[in-house]
Image (cartoon, rainbow, N blue to C red):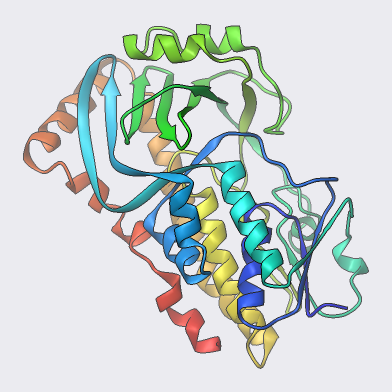
Length: 366
């Protein structure tokens, strides 16, 4: 029996397994799917996430399969409202590429990845358990009771297409909708569109959508988007539901990580980055002489940060979709900031991007 059983072989689970192995712990990852696979969408790695990847020894492998971002640019039609330079290291990567790097490194470090196995946390008799199995985690429900997610009123579409784009994340805003575009390695472009809707039933994010409906829903945002939207052959669509950050993350032997603890809306690009931070902290906690104390420290440190990040993401979503007089006033303010201090908006998130958990308290448990 391994020291730690990790349930789920997504980003949170693979990073946790690798972090455990780096600390000399015997780890096994159980994944119910018959193979490792991710929808071929992109994600953004901010400096807080890259710090963990460097700490785990895979930073250079990630840099080889990703694109460095030089700015976030807010747009309205063809006009630029605000360009926010990114002087520190933000990267854009295809989700499958990140999973592949983490899985290979974990296996090289001795982590066993068992596919096609559905594991109940209650059925693991010894050792610690990390549930990194997403927002429908059985352990999340066991520790917190059944949840009642609330539809946010927004639906997200995502696709990747062949093409080129500047090495920047561009956010094209419009009343009731927005679209994010950025390049990926290998001559691909990632597109994520969010639109407001009155109702939605399914929560899964692997549902295939209609490319024609995607094109129609985001037509007219900017002329340069039309050729990219025309190339969309496969698109996934999912309703965005609001889940609270879990009140309870651990019970002294079992713990939550990633979306199982803090389902994150995609408006601050922090889902993967927070999961990477969780992995580093969890490995430190489970390597501590007293695991129960380590896990309590993990929960106490991580929950307030996750709550703050998720609140900031929700605020971004509202601001992207303004209409009428509020939109006019907000755009004028953004142009004014851009003229005087273009980096000021991004510096508001120094508390988020500037944290390096590999240099923080988790090292005390090494």
